[in-house]
Length: 422
Image (cartoon, rainbow, N blue to C red; front, side):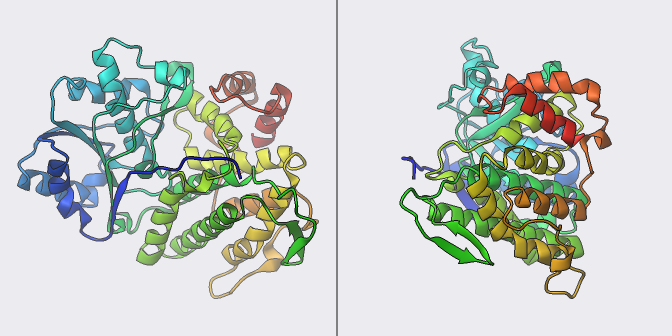
């Protein structure tokens, strides 16, 4: 395992009715004013807004509201939120993000940039320089959509307007996250699967860099596939369990959007998936697929991040399968049975015959399994579904190669993945 420092200070309040304690928790942080940030009407429609406001009012907190955060939020939206805080000039101010990952990311970014803006700093500098921001206004997250894990980490991904640069910044995580999955009951499948695919990709970005222990000489037999003991065994085994949980929970929610147990499992697995635990001992992870997808939804903000990853990730896996063969074989062995279950008809325990044909020991096997799963779940066959064209590819390659975390793939291989993903 690589050396690591693990620290996640986010307090998670998980379960029905947790929003009743929001106001008291904000007060306990020494605040007397909040900026409540939201997206569209979902928070009001499901009742989260009314519960939150009742709790804030009961605690005597002053409140300003900023709405209209869209998917793949841009820097202009972040600056609008920061301005509502007075750019940190007024003490005792915190922010409450109520929504999914886009709302939470935009709010965390605004909270981190507010002090920099007060100093006259360039708001894009933390993104371009990859310099972590350590001072921030306090943020509280109310999650009403699972997938990104943004409620449990110190990352914020923002697009810089029309340039198409969709980059991440490191910033303080929320002080506390409130997760009541009753607000997600009956969520449309397109939103559920978009979040599930995103959550899986986060775990995969770390798992694909797992390395066999140098001292391993004998394989461990599992489902007739041999692979060696891995140096990061505890973390990789945990990650595989998270992936299986996400697949099973999503499969149940596809059959019944009101399955509360499956909602809870997906919400927790999504949060843990990008809380830092999944990368312990694995270094920084890969994140090449995210760099490619950020190029797509940075250039075309209407493209849903998770479903675009469902298209790109298997294609990227095929491209690098030989480079990462041990990790790819291990992932395929870990996921094959669960994917068979997900492909089964209602009432069946599993359907191995529905799995893609081919050599089960081939490193490309994992890509085939994921593509079969995402296709079964209704993911588009390619990026052209959202209007991405061959003419976009040169700019997409440029954006991917400009990503602040350098790609290991040469430009021609990046182009090959984009062409295969169309």
